[in-house]
Image (tube, one colour):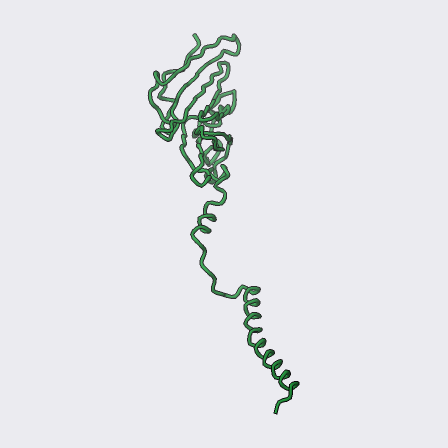
Length: 226
């Protein structure tokens, strides 16, 4: 016959026994976590994988190839839609320093926002900006890039006594989802005499040219001083 205190003691023993059954399992899980044991885990989701793959894609520098040198980064609204886009200019990797007046041209990349708000390569051109040592005595021919609500201007310059400059203006065409060459301004100045000449070209002179297809060498000759 069990007395009340014996029943209480038996209940305590049973409860302790149940706790002993759970304790080692919890301890083993904790030990596995601490020691890095091979514990089955839920597979990574597709969204998580995509996030890992695209991390850093909001940084324009992520679009510069390995070994290349970033020359400039300009932010602005490339399409006129009020977004914060970007433009980068980089020099491709070269095995050694190139001789004066020689070397690969720089690459210009236009980066716009996709539906998720991340930067994407919308267009690029590797013919507009000459090489680092292609500006003559004047030095690096890359002058500047400017973005103004759907317009992109790239300016290059160089020379020695006769200093030349070329400004290329592109405007975003929504129906083509690209930037069309709109205006070219070319000029030359004699730094000793001050004599200057300048010419302006429009689509009537060079036709319908998209950003990626534009090659300055296809334009009419630049003005020359007499």
